[in-house]
Image (cartoon, rainbow, N blue to C red; front, top):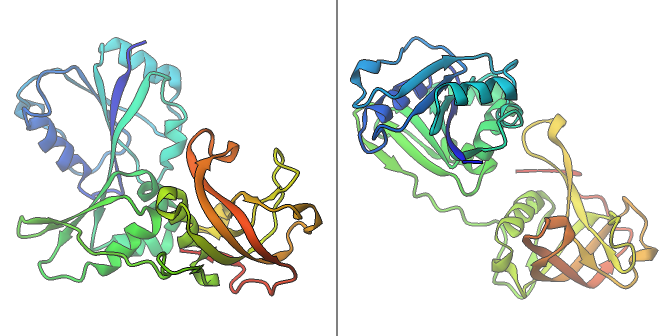
Length: 314
C-alpha cells in the first residue's frame, strides 16, 4: 500500500494556521502539482484562496475532528486520488485522538504548531493539557505576533518544558523571524564523577537520559526514587523512578529506569530508596527494541525520606 504523507498544522483559533497553509500552497517549491487533500477541522475568519495556487490539484474538505472516522478519511483519499494530505486541526481537540483514526497508510511527515504570543500563556494557564498536547508531538512551534524586543524567555520555557527537541521560531510583527538559540543548561552536572539529581530535577533528568541515553553511557548517577518491579525481569531487576506530571493531574505516570540489583527481591514496592548506579545505553524490552538507559546499582539505601515534592514536574 502506497504511503501518503500528512502535513499537520496545530494551534488554537486565529493562531495563524490558515495563513501559513495558504502561503505554503502558493509556493511552487511545495505545490508542484501533487494531488493534495486539504482537511480543515476548524474554520476561522480567514479563508483559502485557491485562485492563488500555482497548480489546482488541491481539494478542500471540512470535517468534524471529533466524529470523523477512518473509513471517511480513506474514502476521501480515494475520491481525490490524494498523493498527500495537509491537515488544519481543531485547537480544542487532542491531536493523538485524531492520529488514532488515520488510515494505516497515512504517515505524519511533519507537525507544526502555531501560537499567538499574545494569548498562548493564557491558554496555558487555563487549558494546559491542550497546549502540552500540541507541543509534545510537534517538530516546530511558531510563536507569532511578537513585538520586536519582546521577552521570549517565557515562550522558550513553555516549549522546552514539553519538548526538548522542538524547533522554536519567533515571528515578529515587523515581518522578521528568528530561530530560538537560547541554551538550556541542565540543573545537574553530567560530567561530575557522580551526577547528583535533586528531587526537583528528576523529571528533567528522566527525560534527558531517555532522549539521549548515549550521552550518559558509562556515567554514574545518584537519585531518590520509588521502587517498582518489572514484570519481565523479576529476578535481579527493579525500576527506581518517580511519578511525573507533564501538564495536569490526568497525565501523571510513573517514569522508572530498569536497574540491575542482585538484592532487588528484598525491596518493598512503592518504598523510597536512594540509588547510586552506573548508566549504560542498551536495548531493553521496556524500550521496545530501541536504545535506552539501563542502570547497574552500586548502592541502594532503603527507607529513604520521600522526595519533595513526591510528584515530579518539569
